[in-house]
Image (cartoon, rainbow, N blue to C red; front, side, top):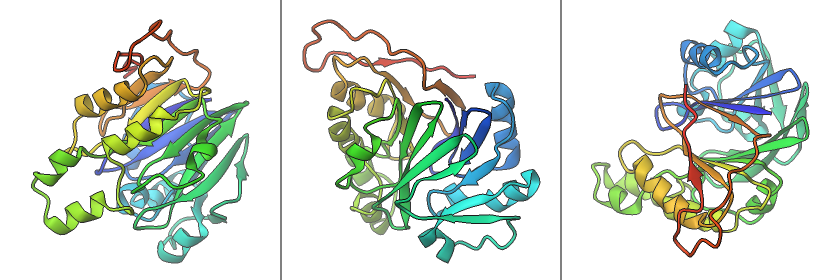
Length: 273
């Protein structure tokens, strides 16, 4: 399985998962030209055969209908998202249960509800015996999420903000409260706590949905490295504007032997176009 992260951040999110000749676009927060350029640069087989939406916020849903019309592909949404999203211009809309696995060609997708201020799901995408999990736009880690993602070779995990940068940043107080709430976004420290218990099967971690105002890749990576010290894990920070191609079958890097706490056990290598 290949994973092409097209864009990740508050200005738009999209990732393509490819396995067995099937390509699925998860979220459509950027337009057709951005996705086409990423596909051409990434060298995957072609455009997606379906679009799956995690939740009904514009940075994940905003371009779904345009893309669906252009590519003549279905849009898959959860029952809760279908109730609030206006998808009348999409050629076909498919509805999935928030806890029921479903198949698109050679790819199987298993959703799990996670806490956000719109009905949101974490997804495990499986193809060719390999799995990639995505968990972004959640304010806290709910019971069951670690088990949901435990069998994944690749994990795309939100590391949205640094609490100190958020508290003294330019956002109005109500928006700061929303971001930091249990229905907002994961902080670097919340991601750290989750990564401390990372499944031994996971060999690649990508930090997702980094705030351009309240975070920095250098800060998020430093926090995540501490959590992964001594682990054989490749670590990336996804970008809003630079695509990233991953191979779920890629072997992990060698961990630092006998790494003490806080040592740089994770390897962060950017495989960018």
